[in-house]
Each structure stands twice: as structure tokens, then as C-alpha cells.
Image 1: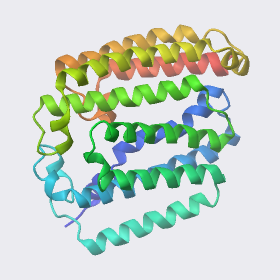
Image 2: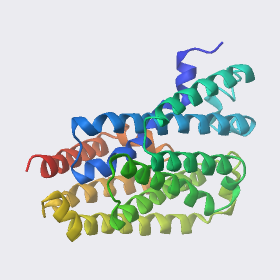
Image 3: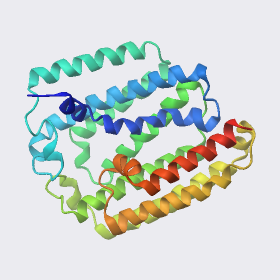
Length: 288
């Protein structure tokens, strides 16, 4: 019989942290104010609830395959906790909540949200079996969150920020695929057999370099400096370098990147680095 813990697992509440990206444009632009917070919260929940529907559809389709995975087998659907009628009710409630939120959100945000849903459904029902394209699709989902966040507060997205998010998302996905290959999860994710382990590791290093470079160029961009009124953002690059070094250590030596969302708050060093970066960035943007 299903309980609250099973429902939390089904909705993947831990994965909702990814949707904090909708707040990033407002945060980077230095315009997080009480007036903006309300619409940002609504946008966050709209994306989170939509992502939960995608997770449910994906888990329902792959429940037999997930039963072979060392950790995914513990999810509610592979264990048969929820029946079809219960899933219809849960999805129906989620759709109702999303519609209520969407009525209060900008048109282009809703278009981004709809595109996110369609692409992820296509991913779940076939595109995730296409090597390299599947990683690009997941990365595009992160980029859509950024654009949607920009539409929420009417903030243009910097080209460097777009590149930063794209490269970082691909880095995290490649690192996850690397961990899955090294841990021998080929049966649970069929596309892994098409990847060369050495090439994936090379991609991880390349994407790490591009991500740090894109962040630095964002901080030095004249338009960004003029908009936020500070030329000191590049000082925060030290936290990016430290965090990236620790992350690559996890990728190549500990193979602890199979669940990125959990790693970022379970690894104390990375958590402290993220907190320090946020604090310094916030100070430069809002305290001056």
C-alpha cells in the first residue's frame, strides 16, 4: 500500500532542485525583490509539477527495465506500489494545479513550459535511445528553464549565460553517463552501449573547461557589468574553480556522480562552495 514516502519518490521531489534554474535569470540580474518573488515561486512550482508528470510517465514506461537497475528498482512503480487508476488521479491533480498556475504566468513562460513537456515526453518514448542526442535533449531542458525564468521577470538572457548553462548541463549529464558505464549499468540504460568510455571522459574534461570559461566571460561581459553595476563578479570564479575541481574528483576517482542532485547537497565540500559562491554573488549584486 502506498504511503507519503512513496508519493514523494513518485513525484521525485529531490529532483525539483533542478527547477531552481528558473530563478537564475532574476538572481544574476540582481532583481530578486519581494515583488518578483511571488511570480518566481509560481514559475518554480509550475516547472516542478510538470517535471513530476514527465517522471511518472517515464517510470511507468520503464518500470520493467528499472527493476534491473541497482537503485531504480526501489522506485514505487517497479515495486508495483501504485496501480493505473491511482496514477491517473495523481496526474490529473498535477495537471489541474499546473493549469491554475499557468493562468497567472506570462505567455512565453507557458510556451517554454509546454515545449519542455513535449520534448521530455518524446525523450521518454524513444529519443533517449539515440546516443548523444539524448544528452543534448536533457541539456536543452536545463536551457529551457533558464529562458522560462527570463520570461517570468522580463530579463534578456546573456549569450554567455546561455553557453554556461548548456555546457554545465552537458558536463553533469556526461559525468552521470560515465558513472553508469563504470558501474556496469548497461542493461538498465540501453543507450550506454553506444558510448566510448574514454570519449565520454574526454567530453567531461572539455565541458568542465568550457563551463569555467563561459562563467568567467559572463562576469567580464560589458553588458552584464553595466546592468548590475559591478565589475567585481569575476572574483567569484575562485569558487567555481574549487567546486569544479571537487566535482571532477568525484567523477574520475569516486564515480559518485550518478545522482547529481543529491551530490550537490550531500557532499559537504561542494555544498560549502555553493553556499560561499551564492553569498559572495549575492553581496556583489545586492549589497552595493
